[in-house]
Amino acid sequence: METQEISELFPLFNTANPETLEWLVSVVDEEDYSLNTEIIRENEWGKAVYFIVSGWVKVRSQYHDQELTLEILGRGDFFGEMEILDESLKSIAVISLSDVKLLTISAQRFLQMLFKDPQLHHRMLQLTVRRFRLLYRRLQLRQQTPKIKLAKTLIKLAETYGKSTEKGIEILYIPQQDLADIADVTLEDLQQIIPQLQTQGCLDIDEIHQTLSLTNLKQIYHFSTVKHD
Image 1 (cartoon, rainbow, N blue to C red):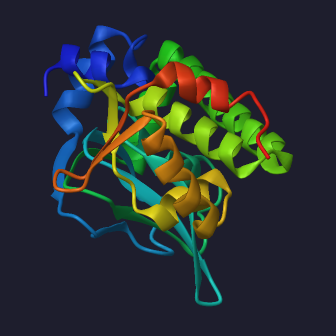
Image 2 (tube, one colour; image 1 turned 180 degrees about the horizontal axis):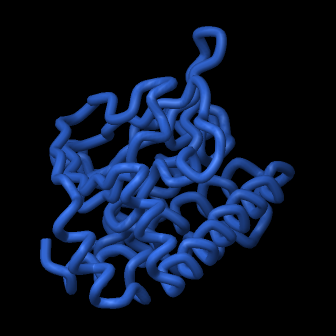
């Protein structure tokens, strides 16, 4: 990838100086993964940072044979940095939800890059704070109705990773259990709400191409702020 492409695609690098970007291009590796592939296995964190060029992944926790999807990440996002800056995670894996293309940089070179470029270091702090703010907002939603929680989750995915199409804002048709996990709703609730949103003209699901389009974002915003019985 060219330096301009990296700067435009990844928010982390949009304030990095040109020398940092030139150096980055010379040291990153490109990796491709097919659907349902473990990108990082449990207890293998802390070796590199991964930047998503295309595709979708889920961050999965497994404890006592129970799996829980913690987060869904898409194009322009990255993962693995916290385990380099702090203790590595346990019982956490990253699985591809589609074909995925990544750029990877080793832990040592990533830290070297942060130390060399103060603007990049500052941007890293900003994005870390933003992630914790989003986590705090998710925790605040725990007392809300399932429809509000699902609506807010869809809005967040659309705003962060969505692509504008003739139908609306398109995201991956995320497996229902994974979507239920990150929205903090039961699978049964999700399976009731999704058809309601389709009937109300808010969602269009293309199972052949595995896409979900938010066709009436204004109405979904309305659902995210009004309590429903």
